[in-house]
Structure formats: structure tokens, C-alpha cells
Length: 495
Ligand code: PFF
Image (cartoon, rainbow, N blue to C red; front, side, top):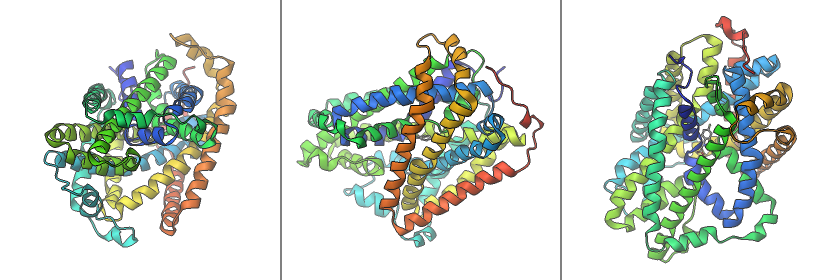
């Protein structure tokens, strides 16, 4: 029988990994990034980013995770005892993502219900910002609690607990095998329907109209690399943890290629759907696509409901399907964000998977209620920017250095090649993971920091500093607490 923390099959591993990668980033971020960075011309930096960074880095992260068959914190400590702090840093940062992702999942849950009767009314913008979120940009909004959001978030947390506290295969493995294919099937239905809408071609022409001149601009290369880091959840200790759960016979190189392909397929499909629908809206309203297009919550909770309002009866089918897709994509991603911290805690303190998950989910639920206040939406934006543009990218650079240089990536080559049924690694791979990747990701990181500092308001600065302090202190606490599991110092290596 499989261990509590072991995949039942390679299929569970691949599908869970695709579930983690395919998330809100594919639906609400990618179409906009593609559009605003040269349209069709963006495919050149995008493909380069996948080949040069996505696949090589994922292979490295998988390889090291597989080698240790233990949690991220435990492995970091084994590589070098001074690295334990970083071993906790990424899992804690990813757990912070979980906490705010739960709010977006909650909002989307509410929209699934509303979509059956277009409950957002004639003005979706005002409904989302004022009626539902009661958005306030002032701290005092923290004292205005919004029960309906809290209830929707609680429903999400209960679903997460139900899946995550079980043994890995019985929970996450089984659920991924159902939800990930379901997600792809629903997306295909949405896209086929969207392509048949009048005006779809207007949106698609706008989307793919290549602006080759942008290829010479640094920003579009950065945008492509940034999108791949986020979309594939690279270097976030998730891929590491999932690979450490595999049995002894995994072909990690081929798995990586399948996962990167599935992720790109999904996001490009999403872009077709989003832009066909925007083209339809443009035709109906006479507004240019460029004025309709947006990303993030604005796209999902404002633009889409606006489109559904003019879509007539079909909206009662397309609306629920669309919000369900967002929910499933979010759910399969959020499930992955608790695994690195949970496994690290199990390893250091000797608690069972079930107990650790229950504790973390209770803590996550309590903290997440801060997002069920009128200040929640604004706060979410601040924390998201801090985590994605500053904390995670920093972690990714350091992880790359620790894995490629201190652990020594060359140790993995023979083993990975011996299992591979597709490509094999050579010197080119070492060149990428040791030199090109750390340099490139550092550049994206510095660029992101500049962006944040340049456009930061006073409130944002305060909450960014507060988030940083929380992250650093929580990481420190996990690092200095004494281990309770005698196995903590015994780390076997498979390669
Ligand atoms: N890869 C996910 C997406 O594209 O939406 C986002 C994500 C999930 C980022 C989990 C980070 C993470 F830890």
C-alpha cells in the first residue's frame, strides 16, 4: 500500500502537478499578458522562456525533490545546515498565497451561485466593488466584516480540508484525477461556444495581430519569463514536494515536458475563449476590444458578468460553466500551496499528515478572515504583489543557486537520463541552470522590485513591510524551534 505521502501512480503525480500549474494565472493573467506584449509576436519570447527556463528549471526542481524523498525544509538543511532558513522561507511564502487565494475562491463561489440568475444586476462593476466587497481603501475597512464572503471562504476551506487531510493518494491524487480532466473538458466546451459567437473573429484578430517591433523591447522578454515563473509555479517548492512524493521509477524529464505542454495548451485555449467573448462584446456595444480588455478580478468579476448580461439565455449555461472553471482551476492550485509547509512540519515535528493539515487549515482559515472585510480586496492586492514580485522571486533565485551550485546539479544527470524516454540532458542543461537562469531571474526580480517601489502608495508600503515581517518571523520560528522527530537528521538520498 502507498505511504501516506506517496502518489499511487505516475498519473496522479502528473495530474496533480498540472492542477497546481493551471490556475487563475492561466485564465485571467495569460490572455492579457499575451495581448499587451505584442500579440502573436509574444510567442517568440514565450517559447524561449518555456524552453530556456520552464522546462530546465522544473527538471532541476523535480530532480532534487525526487533525490531527497523528503520535505523542502529537511532537504535544504541536508544540503547545507545554513540553508534551513530558506528551506522554510518558500513553504511559508507559498502558504501565504494559499490564504489570499482562498478569498478569490470565495468570491468565485459566490459568482457561481449568482450566475444562475445574473444576480450581479445591471451594473456588474458597482456590484462587485461596492455591493459585494464594499471596497474601502482605508485601514478602517478592516473593522467592516462581510459575512457572505466569510461564509463562501469557509465553504472553500472545508472542501480543502476534506481533500488535504487524507492520505496523499486517497485525497489529492484521486481528486486531481477527476478535477483536472473535468477542468480541461469544461474549458473546451466554453471555448468552442465562444468561437461561434458573432464578433469572435474581431477579438481574435486583435489578440493575435503581431506587433513584431516589440520583440526588440526588454519588457516583453521579462513579461514572458515572469509569466512562465508564475504560471508553472516554478521554484516555489511545490514541484519539489510533489516529486519527493513519487515512487522510485519516475521519468521526470518526460513528466516535465508533459506538464509544461498541458499548462501552455490550457492558457492558450483560455486566451481564445477570453478574446472571442471580448470580440462579441465589442460588436454588441461598439466599444473597442482594447477598452474592454483587462486582467485579474476586473476580467472575471466585472467584464464577464457584463458580457453575460448581453448574452441572453445562453448566459445561464455559459456563466455557471465559466465560474465553475475558475473555481476548479483555483481549487486544484490552492491544494498544492499547503503541501510544502505541511510536509516540512511533518518531517520536523513528527506530526501525522492528517493532524498537520488540520492545524494548518484552521490557522489559514482564521487568518484568511482578514480578507472578508471591506479592506480585504485592497489588502489582497498588496500581499499578492509583495509575494509574487518580491518574496517568491527572491526565493526562486536562491533555490536555483542552492540546487545548481551547492547541491550540484551534475549529480542528477545520469540518473535523470537513465529514466528518460524522451530527451536527455547534457552540458547545455548545466549551463542553463547554473548561469543563465539565476542571472535571468535576478533581473526579473530587480525589475519587479523597482516596479513596486516606484508605484507604491503609503498604505501599500506599510502592508508590504508588515507582510515581509510576518514572513521572515514565521520562517525564523520554524527554523529555530527544536525538532521533535528523531528522523529529522536522517535524510536518505535516492540518486
Ligand atoms: N500557477 C498558478 C497559476 O498559474 O494560477 C498560480 C500559483 C499557484 C502560483 C500556486 C503559486 C503557487 F504557489
